[in-house]
Image 1 (cartoon, rainbow, N blue to C red):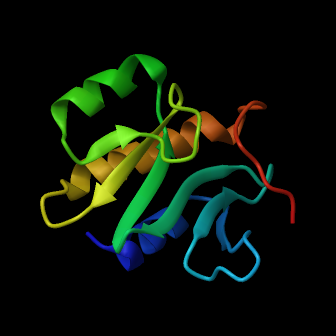
Image 2 (image 1 turned 60 degrees about the horizontal axis):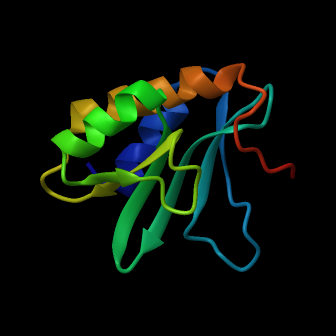
Length: 118
């Protein structure tokens, strides 16, 4: 799985779009809901690696971090609710898709989810 796969999969979810919210930065992409404009994924290049931030159930976050060395507390995000997946050749693509879907569901109606208005 790579950056393009993540974008394509995220856009396959209903009523989503990609956004480039940071001025002078075309490498960071937020995947958002059309209805509420909230992020469900943030894709960044950090130290030459692709980082994917997704929202997870706090009860599940610690289990993920303890089970997969490529999942860490959310990079520049709320550590309780967000995890970062460091995308490399050992990432389980099915798990990444599952976590993108979970983040999509959690942010779809979540008033407290991180949002950047255009």
